[in-house]
Length: 427
Ligand code: LLP
Image 1 (cartoon, rainbow, N blue to C red):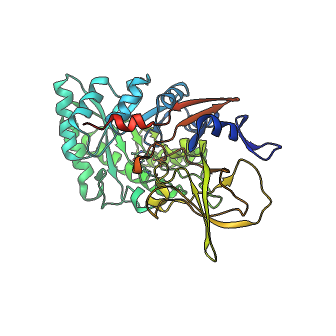
Image 2 (image 1 turned 60 degrees about the vertical axis):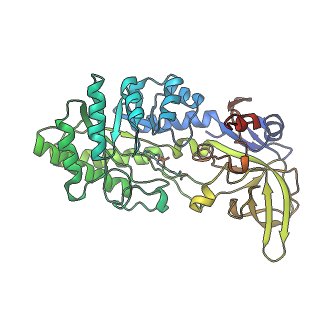
Image 3 (image 1 turned 90 degrees about the vertical axis):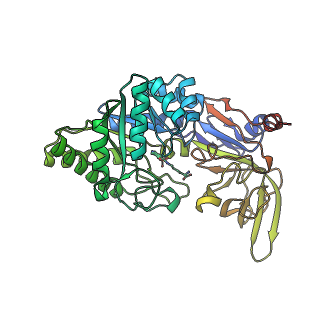
């Protein structure tokens, strides 16, 4: 679905637009988002899961009003994990019943706004929250649809900071030791709650389906226990997000259709053998939808060759627009996009303009030896967790997100200005 190609002049074109013109018009750094690709990925997930399942886009990957409208139009639901994301979703017209609220430490105010708005589900993350959500709903005269998030004890093979189903971490309620069963027992007793299902999210940037299969197996085991103890069959199961994408050519991601088939097969099989009706499935992809749709275009500044080591290529952004390299040792690729070059490849490190040496965008890359100040380079796959985790470190101005489609470019999140920064300063 991607519309990126090289023109006869060697420059990169996206959706029919010359990247050099985009850089002139919108400045650098900028996130360039291919709208057709984003919508195409939404449709691929919808089609893979079909009408008897729901796809909740994880807004934490990247959220803006335009994104909410695309999701709405493409038939996706939306997972939000803060008051800010909830406000954006509602403001852009997402029907509340298609919103799920997550979070391990939701405030009373966030819960109240979600219940009042009529969100489709709140995912309960602790014993205390079961009671809090029930009380808030009762006070508002509502019965809130909820799921309980369980930790299934799967070691997802990914970075420690983004693995979430092992037991020693802050999310969810452990299946182990009967804790999840106890949570279900308590939730079923409370008038303010309608317990509709069980939720599991095992982690992020995962490439094989086996972790999801183990999670599905254990969640169905819990459904069976609930049926046996309470005589209730919970109608829904959410297996979270986490499908990995290709950041470099070394990554080999699974397609939505593969993950859909694997999840459906295992849930169907396990339910059949437990004598349970097959619950309605849902999933929460964030990265796999937003990630590949976007590249960041930077302008090259200082180029410093350290003989015998490597060349440091400084760009006009850095860890403030992509913290993932510094935070997770994430790997990215990079390419010269304002022209082609036949010069020798040189071992390079693309770094930002921030005041610390960990400010690395691409740790190891080959760029042509004639790379010079003013050239444009692009880092692909920056659509997820880059703008959404961007900061103002060193008073950097967060870059715009420019959506391109059919030869048209439009800003969907504008570049910050110095006035924006100063507006928060009091006195
Ligand atoms: N559902 C829940 C409950 C989650 O916590 C997450 C991600 C998702 C869905 C979406 O996961 P995805 O499909 O995007 O992998 N900042 C990190 C990723 C943190 C993910 C947090 N939760 C990164 O840049 O890699």
